[in-house]
Image (cartoon, rainbow, N blue to C red; front, side):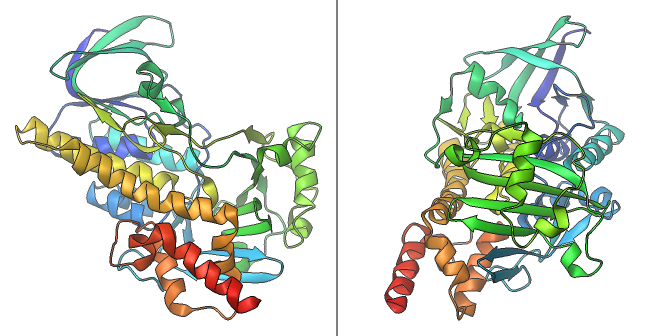
Amino acid sequence: MHDKNIDILIIGAGPSGCVAASYLKNKGYSVKIVEKNKFPRFVIGESLLPRCMDHFEEVGLLDCLKSQNYEVKDGARFIKNNVICDFDFSKKHTKGWNWTWQVPREHFDNVLTNELINNGVDLTFEQEVIDVVFNKDGSSITSIKNKDNSIYNISAKYVIDSSGYGRVLPRILDLEKTSDIVNQSSIFTHIKDIRRPEDREGTRITFDVIDTRTWFWVIPFSNGNTSIGFVGATEFMESFSGTSTEKLREMIKLSDYFKGRFENLEFLFNPIEIKNYSKSVKQLYGKGYALTGNSAEFLDPVFSSGVTFATESALLAAKLITKELKGETVNWEIEYSDYIKNGVDVFATYVKEWYTGNLQKLFFHRPENPKIKEQICSVLAGYVWDETNPFVKNHNRLVKTVAHVIDMETK
C-alpha cells in the first residue's frame, strides 16, 4: 500500500471513531480510519445512554441504526435485597432523549462502519499503528502495519485516537496514568435466553446488587441473546477457582432474582475476564492529536457511560479540529480537556459513591424522593454537563450529604 497524505487520521473504528469520521467527512475533510481488528468483532459496552443519541443524530448516523430494530432501553433497573429502584428516562430533570438501545456491539459497530464506507470514508481493517512521530507544527507521520506485515506511512494534519482499550497514543506517548477508581474486575458472556419472559421483564436492563461492591448485569438484546456479567472487587473475583465458565456459573447462584432464569444455560462463548479495568491518562490532547473515548478514560461499567463519553469526546474533538483547520483559535485546555473532564468527574463521583455505598442508599431508601430521583436519572441518562441539575453541579458533595441525611433518619 502506498503512503498517504490526509487531513485527519483516526485510529479505531468503534462508535467514537465513527462519529468523528462522519462529522469530518460531512465537513469536506479527507479522513482515514485504521482499525486493528477485522469486523464484526466482539467488544463489551452494550448498554447505551440517551445522550449518545444526540451525537449519532448530529453526524447523520441515526437512521442506519434505527433500521436495525435494536432492543429499546427506556430506563434502568437496580435491585438489592428485594428492593427495586427503577429509573424511567422520560422522568428526568434534563430535556433530551428518553430512550436509547441495548446492542450487541459486534453488530452495532459493523453497521456504523458499513455506513461510513458506503458514504465514502476511507476505512481499512486489520491495520495496526506501530508508531507515530509528531512534528513541531502538530502534523504527523504514522507507521501502519498491514496484516501481511508490510509497512506504510500516513501523513496527517491531525490524529484522533479512538482506539478504545487498545489505547494506542497513551502507550506510544507514555500518557498512561493510574486510575483512582477502586480496583474492580469483571467476567461476562452471552447466552441464548430461552427462559426469557415474554413481557417487559424480558427486555429490561437490570443490575442485581449482591453486595456493596458486587453486582450482576443483565442486558437483553432483540436477537434473543442476553449479555450477562459479574463485577466485583478484584480480590472477590479471584476467590473463585476453575475455568472462567465454572467461575461464572458459581457466581450466577449468588443472584436470587436471576439464577432460575440463567442457571445451567449454555454460554455462547467462554466467559471473558478483565481485571482492574479502570483507566486514565495524564492529558487528553497534545499538539496535533486528541484522545477520545476509552483511549482516554474508562471509569466503570455500572452506569454504562463508556459509549457516551466515546461519542461526546469524538464529536467535540472533531468540531475543534475543524475550527483549527479553518485557522480559528482553539483553547484545547478549556474547550476540550476541561469540558470532558467535568463530565468524567461527575460520573466518577457516582461510581466512587456507588462503591462506598452512599449512592446505593439514595437508590434503595424508601420512600423515594421523586425530585432527587429525576435529577439522578438525568445523570444516568448521560446528561452530566447540565449544571442546572444540582446532582451535576454539586455532585462532589450532594450524594454524600443526602446519604448522611438518610443515615440520620434511619437511626
